[in-house]
Amino acid sequence: MLTVQKFGGSSLGDGEKLRRAAQLAARERQKGRDVVMVVSAMGGATDELLALAYSVSSAPEKRELDALLSTGECASAALCAIALEAQGQRAISLAGWQSGIFTDTEHGEARIQTLTAGRIRSALAHGIVPVVSGFQGIDRYGDVTTLGRGGSDTTAVALAAALQAEGCDIYTDVAGIYTADPRLVPSARLLDAADTRDMLRLSYAGAQVLHAVSLETALEKGVELRLRSSDGVGEGTLVRLLGEGERPPLAGMALSRGRITLVGREAGSALAEMRACLAARGIECLGGAEGKENAFVEVARGDAQRALGALHAHFFAEAK
Image (tube, rainbow, N blue to C red; front, side, top):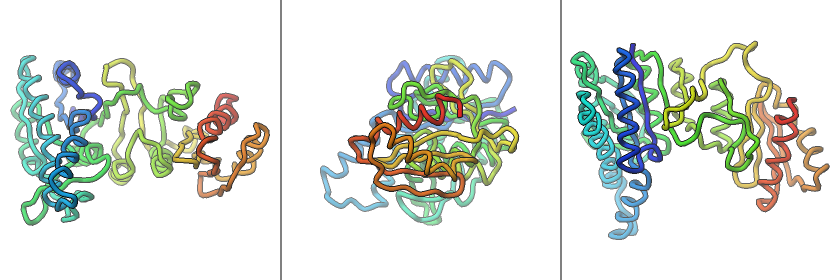
């Protein structure tokens, strides 16, 4: 059995977090499972590299930006491999090009075209944990490319599909997926399971938990994801294609600037109810629309968090 584990930058912010990530991978190995780790740059590293680039040029070339930014993930991969070796687990760090991740030539927003994974398979066959630099690949000219926002998630999902992994665990600094951003809505509920289609719509609407390209890849390839806390506590949220009998009528809400979107198989007819909810609380609705399995309203940005809380209480806390 094989598990792909992806660790975001907030899960790799310092030496202690790096060791904890390595421990989670080592724990899977102790259960007799093969593991592939995919890592982002350490928290803040990408922003620091970007700032350095723009300190020497007001318009750096995209090719050179990709060459620079990709080093953040490579540093994380090497550090995680070192941490695994320190715990008695053989490991090898691999950049995107060493992992057989081939992309198109769109620097900064490249898409994966082919994934051979030869060195990854070889490492697994010898009981070695491959630690893969996420967010990057190589194009037909031999140049390093980066995959854009959420690229490490996309790397992990693509590898899980190519290697026919049993699961793909996305480790982050939250316990799983909630019905709304718990930082904005403290009463938001943690979900045991969520439908990939609903999560994709929420991502399009501005939810930050899972990125759209990774969800598109998961939907296309039939990959099941599990969003988990990097502290190793709890089972997190399983994201997969749910049957209609399992799929809840409403999945969640997302806020982007002044737009609040409700998503779910029954959300497409909810606009009038959303408007009425806001009106009852004295919040002006500036606009809105219904779509396929989603509806949104627009409010002033100063009212956005209060409006989100009111709508969440109406549609979720009252068990609608």
